[in-house]
Structures are given as structure tokens and as C-alpha cells.
Length: 100
Image 1 (cartoon, helix red, strand yellow):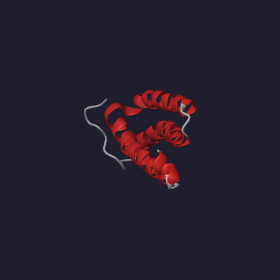
Image 2: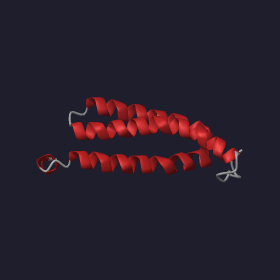
Image 3: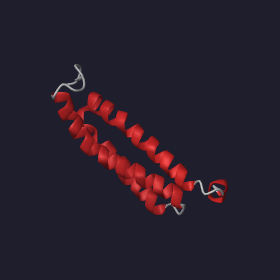
Image 4: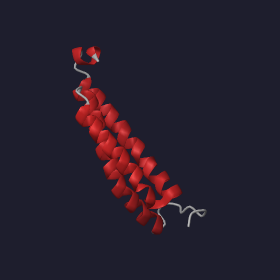
């Protein structure tokens, strides 16, 4: 952490981790809807609440920001789950034949 602060790299690390977190949630939403449908929204909500609480409790600005990004990416993922269901209905993504 001291190295990052000394060379003013904290913003770059926050940006990189934000990019990776958002990139991680894209396939999580797709796979979540494929295997569980929209009923897995509560897992995204629960993770978002935990990450939000962590963001409020962590003193380090960098890690607090990363937790905040994870929290709101998770909350955004809830809406994307329902949008993903519409995309599957339109035939843009495959429907899981084993799920009713």
C-alpha cells in the first residue's frame, strides 16, 4: 500500500480493479440466469449489501472504493438478470433446456 501511495498509483489500481469487477459481473449475470433464472437475484443483493457494509467500515480509501464498486456492480447485476431473461426470450442468448 505504501508503494502505491508513494508513486500515486492508487487511482490506477482502483480503475483496474473496477474494470475487472465489472468484467466479472458480466458472465456472472449470464451464467446465473442460465442456471438459476432470475431467482438468484437475492445472492447479488446479499453480496451487494455485504460489500456496501465493508465499504463503509474500511478506512483505506482505495479498498473502500473497490468494495463500493463491487457493491453497486452487484446491485446493477440484479437489474441485468431481469434484462438477461428478456434477452433469452428474444433468442439472443441460449435457454437452459434443463431448467423449467
